Amino acid sequence: MALRHVITVLCIVYLVPLVLTVLDDTVKYSLSWPGKEFDLKDFAGEQYNEPETLKIKTQNNEEYECMIPTYLKEKSDEEEYNEATPPSKLLSPLLKKNTCTYRLGLYWQYEICHGKHIRQFHEDKIAGGGTKLQEYFLGYFKDAVDENGVLEGLKPDPKTSDEIPTRKFDGVTTPYYELEMTSGTPCDLMGGTKRKTRVLYICDPSSANGMISVVETSSCEYEVVVATPLLCANPFYRVKSDDVNEIFCSPLGDTPAKPHALVMEEKKDRVQPSRERREVVVDRADEISSDAVKDDYRRLENTQISSQTDKMVLRQFLKGEFCLTGNSGWWSYEFCYGKYVKQYHIDKVSGRTVIMVGIWDEDAHLKWAKTRTARHVKGVLNDNEGEVENQVNMVEHFYHKGDFCEAANKPREVVVRLKCKQSGSKHSVAIYLREPSTCSYILGVESPIICDLLETADQNGLFHGDV
Image (cartoon, rainbow, N blue to C red; front, side, top):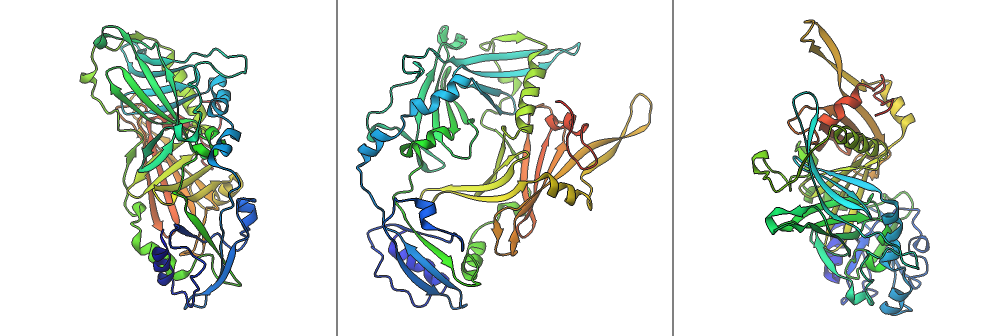
């Protein structure tokens, strides 16, 4: 934000008095409230000069000490770029491991085995209990390794930082590294030309090498965006924040981490998406009716791949490696089973804003489950015997110690509800987030793929046994 916008924010929290001569009106600033234990050197190492400091006080007698660092730049961009690890070398370990991740849609499912292939497939049950598999490969990767241990199928690294291509994702300009997968399943619409895919890898430190999007850019040509933490080791592949200088304000004495007036202002301005339940399917981009599937797609029959794929997806889900995402307006949210639930928002100025909603701790869950029902059952009529049987239809898991909530004066926490919900599409997933009380949330996940898991749940709602 420019200087006048900093003054506007300061006026909102009623700061008196404040000397602004240390600020440069030609530079963008961003206000941060990192808390009492903040240490600028721990945050930034040696990249800042000794900061200017000033003390401020609100009309509520909240006192803060603000640090205004000046960026210390000893090297040019090109010197820094030449010293950074090139993207091809950063990605090579992932591509050599052939790790596979999945993206679930309403009709098509996607599989990318990094450094191997991209596959699109759909499975239908047929009479007799088997399955019919429709699949085609969107491209293969050339996995030969040169004398330096780098995969030959990778494109040459950009020679300068200016050559790094960028793309806007959610309105944010993002650098990416591209590789090609070619020689896929022949395309009848294009005279037998083989399918191919451009794979764009982008930096995301909290990602698990998963697909963000899959788009068919023209007939039988595709573009896949993959978020990976590996590229983040090269600073030129991180999302840039328009050279915003942060002003860090730490509380003094018993002052809260952020001024109360500012907390109230933000709460008033922000439309809380979680007040109203909104179900969001993981991927609607490839929604398609079965009537639209033409003979161009090669059909194969296989009775093994369906169960193998389901097991692999479930294993990744239970390990926290396959995370589910959804959004409701301003906020998006991410659930990684057995790890965390968090909200995040991306904008052009401040980049990615993340709020940790809750973290998994089995001991805390077991303590929570002692006073609540963690495993829910319902009566189901047995068609063969005419008797009512109790079946598990939902479990609840408790995640706690999220980011501190000033409005509730406690850390955020969330109850995750995993519910069996039958659907025409076996792999459809509905996910929603609600906030019944301030900073206490309910995350609902409903899918047919959860039904089999529920049968292994114990009285505390925890899953046991093999998938």
